[in-house]
Image (cartoon, one colour):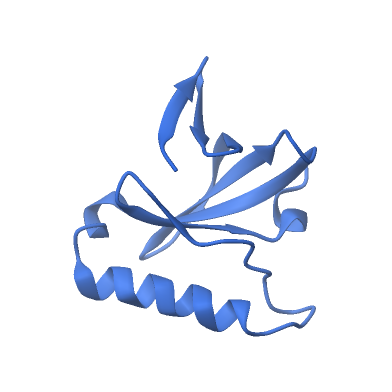
Length: 100
């Protein structure tokens, strides 16, 4: 899964990044669009400065696995975990990034 430019938007596999939705201590949440399914998703990525930190990468992946194991309205749905240019990324629940 490679990140590439498509006009002015960054593209992660089948998700076109629309904007940065939020940032936290370890990650960045991007608003993405899945053109093939016509839906918006949130894509959580590990901050670039932490991408080479083995402990941070393991924590990010552990968090995604734990969230994926739970099915509850109050817990985000993890659709996938992948690496984009050596940085872990996890597309998440579509309703988080609905268009306004």
